[in-house]
Amino acid sequence: MAISSAEPSVPVLKKEGESGVRKRYQQKQCAKIGRGVSRSRIELCLCIIQVQLTQIESVFRSLKSELSIRPIGHQLEHRADAHVLIAFLAYSLQVTLKNRLLLHAPGLTPAAVFEKLATIQMVEVWIPIVDGRWLVMPRHTQPEPDVQALLNQIRIALPSQPPPRSKAAHIRSQ
Image: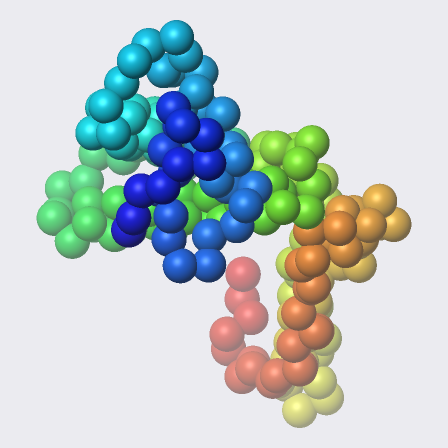
């Protein structure tokens, strides 16, 4: 990771393949914090790190409401580890979505996209077969035109419908 500066007073953390949108966003955030203050490069790096830490904390706070993840009192260590893993994966997906939105749909927030995508549902259709087994067809609903336009704009494609499978008769007693 290297430090460079597009403007004399605002450093930018560069990574391989980092987009210009992300660099400009970091510049704006750091400029807000360091405006009118003479800072050394180390202080400005700390400023950028602090901005990123603040963003991470904000996302973890929003996990409770937007992704419906609630803290759970786990009795076993492996369950607590699993809960942290799920929270981290949710955070990673939200940050990935946020970065994709910065590139393809700058006016949208992850919360607005989650609300739109909530209309797409995954269902399983269970059809009885003559020999007593069940034909199980997992399906996702087709998105409404506005949701499909959003998916196209942020360049996300739904997977194809999975193939049907059969299940033994004794499984379907729910």
